[in-house]
Figure (cartoon, rainbow, N blue to C red):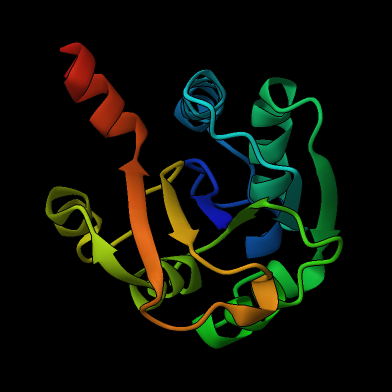
Length: 176
């Protein structure tokens, strides 16, 4: 079995000092949301062996906030994860080096959301409905595949195991 965790970067400032989208930083809420989602994933046993992280500042900062909860995870920063289409993301996942059992990808919409939607066939109806039109900031999608290697995953063969976001965590705790 292979498990894929897709994590969208946390909430960011509107503009960067440089004026470049790639340089946008997490805002205060983004920093706390990233910590919250990282802690929740770890506490619930969603621990990746390998993380592939976009080189955009906001994705790197998201990783920096969650990485203390995933101390045994090997990380690789990839320029190709900056705003790719879902088809490009799919190829990156299929080619995961070291064939990890659990792979985390930290990246961006719309590709992350489209990939999650395209990979999942079987799923919890409530989670699939909540995933709906968008993958919110700092939200994670966990998809399980009954395959021995990443190279064997295909569209609609994954099972949507979980969709979690800071907002859903707040709602569950009664904080919203």
